Image 1 (cartoon, rainbow, N blue to C red):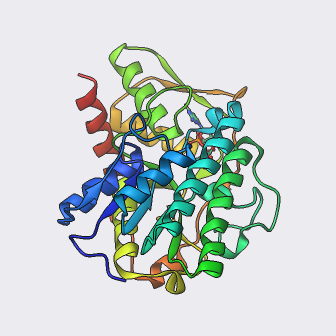
Image 2: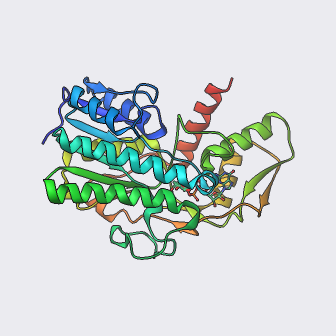
Length: 314
Ligand code: GFB
């Protein structure tokens, strides 16, 4: 099943961090038959609305990049919303894709699906081998359900639904709200505002010791389109990790962002905030064997994201 430039492609979540990057990638490659709906136009948690949309539009390919996402505090504070909305979105789109003969679907999971204390780097086969990290258990359970929906629809109905597990992503169109965002946008904003307001210190959450792996969302979009163009579920297996193969501590990340932004004050740690899982580094052997690797270095990616952030906040 070859996705061609005229194929009708539905991109769910086209305004989000990942969806907007996939949209840029597809458009730059000349895909000309893309369809999108805003949240206001189509509520993806509404099964009837999703079914009607699929029956009317009959997309041939689907990128499922719509999700309720957030950083450690948002996950920990709104677990009911994270599990409910994500389960509904996934179940509605995956089932409608099956019923309407979608040729291939790509489902986006997250590296938080792995057990909290799994060996590192995280291999695909470690899924469901131990308890999850508490701060994002609700989100992780929903994402695991999405992987298994794809797997079991493939098994029972012979569909071609592939799943990818990205590491922590960042880039343009991220959420920069200090309460609900991930660490990267939060720190870019905190260091920028402290510099502009001439403040003496920036506060980071937790001990600074947790290790995280970061990937620019344009690399993620490139990987998603690459996999959709070239591979099917029997090539990929249950799912494939998408990462860069390297991680850094939150303390090191803070120093790097501080340097890029040009903030000259100090960094203070707020130990009342959670650290989350101690390490989350993906094993990318399978991805490499499929012939793909990331191109954007962390420093270059942060600089580009900081430039974008400044362009939005003039
Ligand atoms: O990115 P983040 O919110 O999520 O936090 P997770 C990563 C680490 O950065 C944690 C620390 O150890 C935070 O305590 N951190 C330091 C900060 N300063 C800040 C700050 O100002 N804001 C934030 N947000 N963190 C999420 C999951 O886990 O990762 C999701 O909750 C999802 O389910 C996502 O998997 C990719 O990496 O801990």
